[in-house]
Image 1 (cartoon, rainbow, N blue to C red):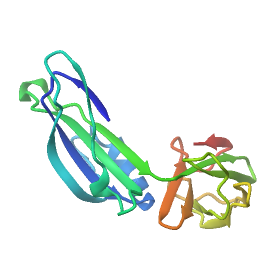
Image 2: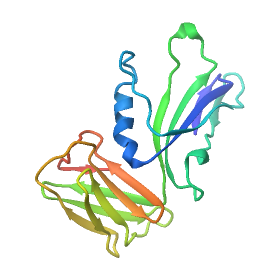
Image 3: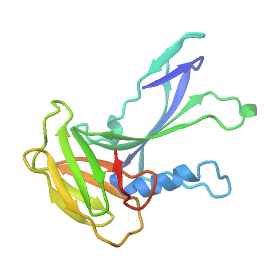
Length: 193
């Protein structure tokens, strides 16, 4: 949902993406204001339309963006949503943009990293109960594991670092969720959520 005042419409663009697109998304975010080296957003553009806000003059208006075009038939998946006010006067410079990576998932995933291992916890978002049997992968290392009946797993980390965003992926059927260390491309002693 987006909140605006005094805009008749919002330009909404959606891209269907997967966790494999996250590094390209981070690069595009870093370069978004670099007009000499702009990087396109990753993924497949699935929606690019104006959405009416329905708001009156000087009223704070909430507008819902339907993400379904970017998700699978179960409503699961990942999307990049880009929202801009429309119309935007050209003499005001570039329109402000809100760019967000959105996960639609039934899984909650949490991780704590120390020097030797990553401790993961997976649960069901609808009940809060532990999610056993969830396949885990620490990318870009390819280290895998599975949560136990308590939703917990401990994965031993390698000594060597690799390029790419350090992230913990959780898979249960067609449902994929991840947490990433947004501060670094290396696994650090931290709590990544």
